Image (cartoon, rainbow, N blue to C red; front, side, top):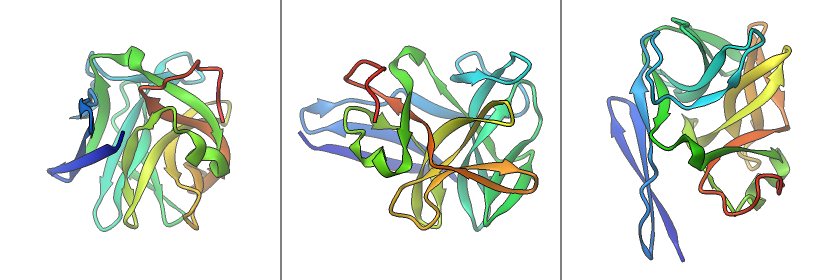
Length: 188
């Protein structure tokens, strides 16, 4: 069975649709504009150090790309990393949503083993330097944080997060996935 990924671009943001040769299997996640208010169908990604929910965001930076970010509850800005810098943004931010949050999971992995995660569809979170980025999370500064995952073949490989004005990089993290076919305890 072959799988295909179709990307549509709308106002600078990616809409993901996936299908297989045995028929259409439409991914049911989508990106909504984020203006400081969290929509009811936003996918929760965990909690911050205060016990408040965090969400998966996507920020557009001209001449850089679409970058996965952490959205904190009721925050009006997000931080993204690129070129070993941190960018604070209050415009061009999307929040990941779905009507079926139970179909998604966080899969523990190491960057060198991501290619072995064939039992799940990794959720693309954006692009940078013409490379598809995935969505990852890790405990950083005593709370969960969302960031961009560069694949292992990239010189920038790993999960990148904002930290003290630069990028912190992790090589063991959880990656966001859809339609996993094995028990969530089976990880690579």
